[in-house]
Length: 209
Image (cartoon, rainbow, N blue to C red):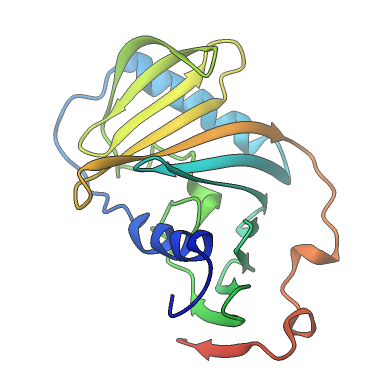
């Protein structure tokens, strides 16, 4: 960002950094991890419109937020940045700089700040995976699954839902950790779910389409 608070600068840094390059590799994917990830994918699919409250931590700095998903559309809300998507177009609103950046959606992206509709989908061939045993995360008993070359997923043994995702950020020499505080299924979506330029009157609009 050109200007803004430290939190705003950090949010922009997250948007730039949390583009994880994913690729298929030939390492072994075991049956137990596949079963856990398949059950997770099914649970998410059965939620209808849902809301996730999360925090992202990189190198000791954290930002909290929430996102709502309905089909391929989503709304991500953080203190400094709001993202809207209708499945094809994304509006990235920078509240401090008073900018709206418009771009097409990358369907292969699966990061929480760019395309959260696919954040919990690990079975499309982009990952190979391996069950790595039990783990205690934020006081929750979890099954740990290694995502080869990318990071780790921690899934609650009680609910089958994600508790933490940890992505290895080679450029920083650290991990990006996404902690899932709560998931609410079958939510009602209001008018605020959709982008409305009237809410951001006076903002500079930058269109990359």
